[in-house]
Image (cartoon, rainbow, N blue to C red; front, side, top):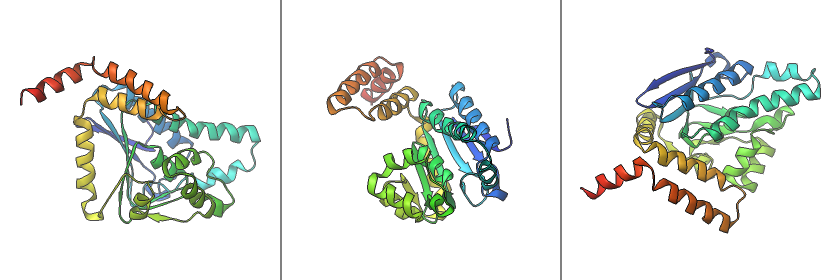
Length: 252
């Protein structure tokens, strides 16, 4: 596996660390491939219950590699479209993984890096973290990651962030719904570890059903959503996890 992403598994948690600290963990083609490989490993390893994504060094991820982006200006439209679709495969793979993915954000999460965090199921951040989509300030568009941004925070906030490129700290990002939980910098590692532990000890089947249903609700009507909920409800009652957990609770 590429050293662009360092992978460690312990206690049911696969930690994927973006490993280009000298480049603020900028995303290049090699990192995209390494991220997909890490997600594939998490999917195939039954011992992995939850995935954590973080950055090496002081920042989470500053976005796409600017040298690669500049070189793309000389490529054909179709070549650049294929490169963009290659990046999009990371987000598709994250969405399909039946295990929760948690972004641990310290420092800057910008542009494609902010999109990578937003594509995770949960974002845990320090108060001093910085989130934003400054692409417009570089004559570019947050085109791929806008799908995640718009769904996370709604139209008005999403357009504001995409059109102005302004940055939010962890507290502001939590206030607009971009971040799940925010912690004081000094307590971050301890608090994040506890969230990961809780997820790793939860029922794998219940989490898988929850994630699948949660994202299937996109675009469904109210009635369709309730029918999907009834289907998931019925299937979840037949799992060994359900029987064991309920029996244990009733014996208390």
